[in-house]
Length: 273
Image 1: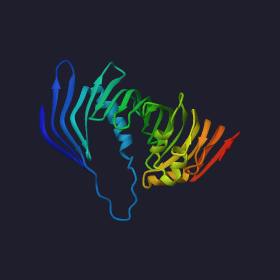
Image 2: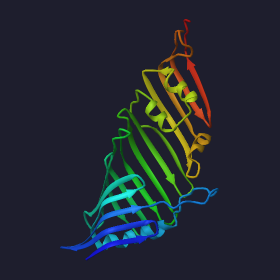
Image 3: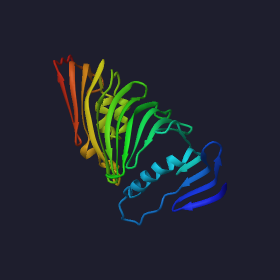
Image 4: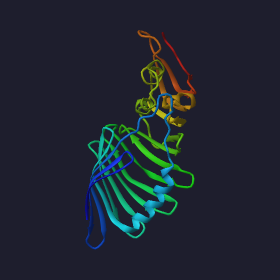
């Protein structure tokens, strides 16, 4: 059974087919997801009203279809391919791919939740690998997760987060030995006159990321700077604060960032300027 095109709101489905072999499969050639323009002055927010219906629809559809594929999913300027295939009576294997991203995840559809185990998630653009677990809850309309990430091939972190229609709250710590910190600092988009004191002037043999936490509002992501907190201990510190002068050397240095204020505290420091 085939259908050339179907439009639902800002989503367009093209060339969809139902296939019956031993079980029922749904294959769609193209899905385009548009974005509606908001009136000027209206704040951006994520409408999660569809979450409850989507989770429950997924629960029942997972019992109807043994496989669901999208050859080309277009979201803005990004293109993906999607393959959701039943592994057994309880779980599905989801594979999402693009030129720069590969995700393999095991999904379990319940009546009120979707549970996901991320088997593998790789981004070549950010040289990042991620594993962990997620849960989408229709009752609270929240996405919660616990992830382990290796950023830039050298920066292992563990992160927990909760996201709703207003914001995402996250907290994390190191998940292994860290030899450089620039990869993480770059993610937060700090102004260079702040970041340089952490990544350009400060070096050491080992970084201990004690914690980081913050909140990102969907309607004003830059507001993360008002809530971002982090604390790092740097072993065998060398700190250059003026060109042409010898660095300050310390046994270790505590670096903390709290709500826009950077504090650097060398310990057992020496200076031979």
